[in-house]
Length: 456
Image (cartoon, rainbow, N blue to C red; front, side, top):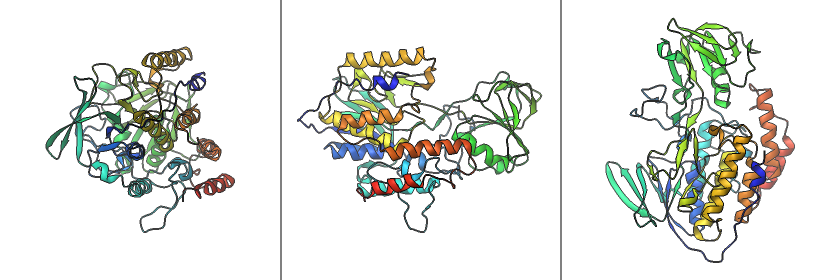
């Protein structure tokens, strides 16, 4: 595809004038934290709004689940995190960390030294990062943003927040949206599901396998969480049947290493007698359907009069997945791309945003940005890429990262990081059971730690 090639056609230039701005950052997860750091480094005054009582965003584990296990009721009590208790990273820590703050193993009672650590270690890394750069002093905890709207003067954004029952209104020059996208579940459409009598749950509300003891479970999905959860459930369930779009038509096969887990092509339909029929023709009496089917982007607080929309999970129109041309640079988004190495991508996006807001980096004109977005969308359509995959960047994430780095005048993604990512991805596909604890890229680990010396 030409997506990567079009990234090289920037019309940005550097300016000698630095203008500090008053900037609101929404969310204190991995994106919001590095946004705050980069904005303050560039001289901006920053307020981070965080609705919970601590930093970390989706990396804060919550054993509670929502009353609506599918997560489709808009009035439900929302639990932000989608972590399950046993979750370990599917990236090695060397790859995962911010570029200039390596994710090194640390000694300590509650630390996890593994190369692919559990979620608690990631949260502790983010807390270390926040402490190192004094980010918490910029955060307003327990402050949920309920409305963001451009003032009538067209120059300022009014941010309304609810802080422990008190409503605050404050105006900002710019708003950086870092609220994550692992809270609003996407659900598979299954013909006949309304009359099917079994239980349905989305992986957003999966925490531990014990509730599936001795049950027949159908799991829909094939991404990293689906792989982990299916294998964990297989340890307690009677049967686990995985329905995957990536499986060839008419697939029905027992997965190696298990006597109670099968891979199928997708579900054909469900019936009121409790049966579920797969496209391969097999029929299963199931107790539970577990949707590991991803998430919707959702910005319930954002009011743009239709300038920015979410259409079939495409947030747009956005220049380089960050700036809506008609509102740039005063509204921007961090962290929308997926199938990526996230933290370093957030870091590059935030460096770019901070430089643009200060006047050090110049964006193309509104018309030029709109034309590039139009060309990007046309290219996706011509290549047969569904709209919902607009922000899927797995094929060109490093080219994107390097383009961002070039705008900021900083070094791009290290070669060892790219090769380590590809190596771990290959092993994850080939050895899903053991790739986190067995590896052969020792030379890349050595290169990484040599590189880390300049930051430590």
